[in-house]
Length: 111
Image (cartoon, rainbow, N blue to C red; front, top):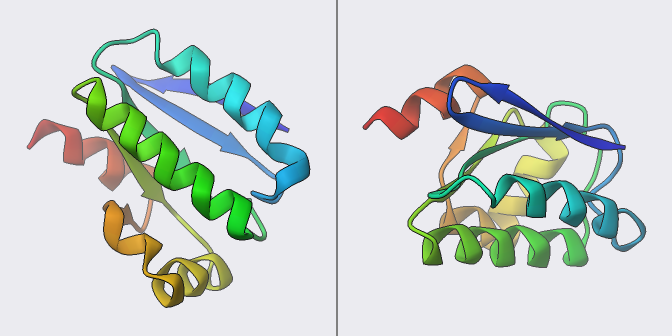
């Protein structure tokens, strides 16, 4: 299940389901709600997300691009070692900034 919370003017998306094809429609629904805030300033908190597959990787790239087109950004925070490895090995992690926790990801928007 995915949800969104506010940290100041930042939308933080969090959940505990894998970023895999069966879960992406729910994630996308939550993501679409965050795009109402222009420019979108979104942190994807991956602390409790156990796994991501190619569909999840593609979703992160698409979400990053949509945010950029609206003048905003998507940041990744607190990915577990497996998800960090998946992002690194595939090269997808080079497309956006990743942070060790939500606080540092949210602070990055002030730069």
